[in-house]
Amino acid sequence: NETAQSVSNIEDLTVTHVFDHHKIDFKTSSPLFYHAEALGSTSTILYGFFKKDGIEIPKKIAGLMLSGLISDTLLLKSPTTTDVDRDVIGKLASIAGVDDVNAYGLNLLKAGTNLSKKSEQDLIDGDAKTFKFAGKTFRIGQVNTVDIPSVLERKEALKKAIIAENEKQGFDGFLFVITDILNSNSKALYYGS
View 1 (cartoon, rainbow, N blue to C red):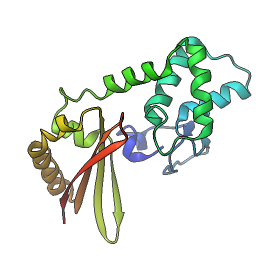
View 2 (view 1 turned 120 degrees about the horizontal axis):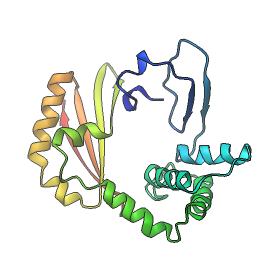
View 3 (view 1 turned 90 degrees about the horizontal axis):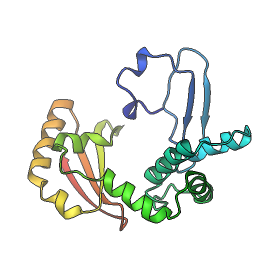
C-alpha cells in the first residue's frame, strides 16, 4: 500500500483489495477491501484468510507464501517478526514440502542478495523510502547481503550515485544501510547535510 514501494502508475489504477503488513499510506477515490495487520509478512495474513475460509493452500502457493515470509522476516530474524509468523512458517513449509526451512531460507536469501550484476543506482533505489521531517527531505535505502565487505568495495561508486541522487531529487541527506542478513549486522553510509 505504500506509494514509495508500489507500481509507478498506482494513481491510474483501480485498486479493489489490499492485504498488507506495513503502515497505512494509501488513498483511494472509491471504497475497497482493506486488511492490514502488524505482522512480519503479508504471507502470514494470507495464511490466516485461507484457514478462516477453509480453503486448502495448494503446494506451489504455499511455497510462494513461505518464500515471501522468509524474505519479509529475513528468516525470522527481522525485528518485525511475530510469534504468529514463527508459527505459520512451519505450517507453510509442511504444505510446500520443505523439510529444512533454515537451509531453504538461507539459499533463498543468498540468491536474493547476489548484488554483483546490480548497478549502484539499482542498489540505492532497490528498497528506499523518502521521509520529510523538520522541514527537510531524507532518503533511506537498504540493501541486504551476506557479504558487507563486497558491497563496501563499491563505496566510492555508491557515494557518487547517492550524491547525484541527492542533487537530482533535492534530498537533504541519504542514508544507505547495508545489512548482513545472516548475522543481523549493518553498516551505513550517509551523504548530505
